[in-house]
Length: 336
Image 1 (cartoon, rainbow, N blue to C red):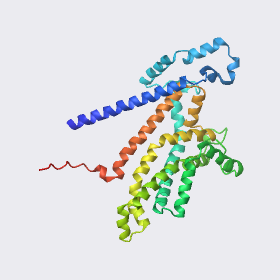
Image 2: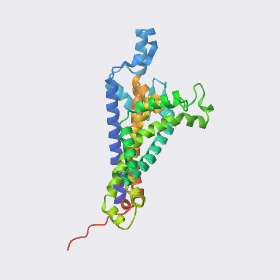
Image 3: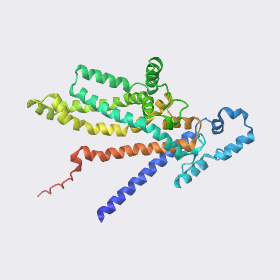
């Protein structure tokens, strides 16, 4: 009974902490939007701004709540959020929840593929580089990781478009499918063809940090007493890397991969802009440029929950990867 109470209290504390985090994220995001010099009415009208009279501007501002003070707007949004409603997007003229759901399903293929490939490739390269420290292979992998870690996302994406799409013609220039073709008429092979270059670009950028951290853990293992004892018994560096290094380095690699979900989403925003990919990242930029407060707040909260879910999943997987965390601790023996 006492254990159930403790679990309930711990769950309640986590939920309260989560609620406070989301409230702070929403408050900061709203404050930044209010400090933006973009006029929401002008952003809503776009090229039609010169054709609208002052009376029509007032009606538009009243329709979307632009004329209310900032605290009133934030209070209205919180009331809608408490009832499970994220509000309406004036950019897409749809409920925010529908826009996020539609756009995220398109971004999921890009983010999921890039995340998985980054984890696998970065871990493999880190193990190889750390197991063969100071070798030519280690120098090549380390140089690749340092160069890509310092490369701007948009620059690498533009370079990929110019090389593979414009000059070589191997990949499409933009979009999630052929222009003018409905989603239902696009075949799976065509979708994958449009995804290849964005996924490769995002993967190359996400691999660097995992490679460097995994290499550092492998180098530390190769210099440890465990490796020295194994070398004395005739084991090779490959044997030590396979028997001890993979498990030793997998936990921090998984931690870093799950903790970098927010960074990966930030990279996908630029990737989707360069490739004109209609995902959640492109909707984020559109909401910011056109001062769509409900949509931007909804995306911000969704992203925060996405990152928190990744960290929670990492904590859960610790117990699967490291058996020591599943063993209950024995109470310390009392001294006589």
